[in-house]
Image (cartoon, rainbow, N blue to C red; front, side, top):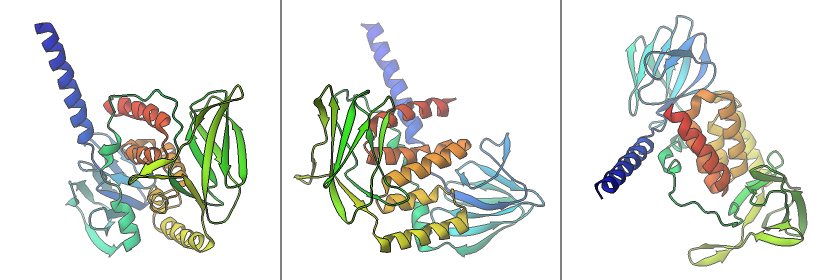
Length: 315
């Protein structure tokens, strides 16, 4: 009996320790960009790494610029920009920046739109919680509402039936795709106008083995819908992308938050994934990709990559 009690106590300690680890995950305090010359950062105060492109800064980080180094920093909570001058050492606190030596001059405040996008980098820990139960049933699910465009014309969903086929129906258009062995089904769709309901079925051995059903929202059953980005919205998106590229660069993680804002969930996923592939040291930003996986109902890839990320963070 005592052995069982000890075992239960040990499991409880491990559970709460793990929960505390992820509950304590921090959101970025600021983002460093427009870096010129030699600028370095450290996570632990020991190993310094050169900043080669945009860098998200977390509490506890330190940044130093050499005599030829400079850059700009946007603080998340205030949206205020700072100029990182040459010969400066700063530390990142819980909500701000502190110049240990040198000069950190306040610059113009970023636009309300960009400020709002930066502030979306919060509550990351809510997407790193491992659920105790695992759904092993073959329930086909997909994003509830999504916007697509010429540059991002894709729908995605979990591959539940390997070596089967899926039929996607959007209005009167049908797309048939073999599942293959990948974790995610990705279908490129043709342009259309307005918003349309979409349906998905999985077929194996000439039988329907899974089907997308209506979801319940506020007590009502609703259909899954996809909208093609209207021309006026495309012009606005083009402007936002140009403005963000001019300020933060074309591969900025921040663009993904704008895609989220306008329900372009697949575009957001692609933006985040590319950024993280190009910037593996920004592993702390991965939970925001998990947030998009949850919206897209990509439970399989979410669980797989969450497990990989958990192990990487523990090392």
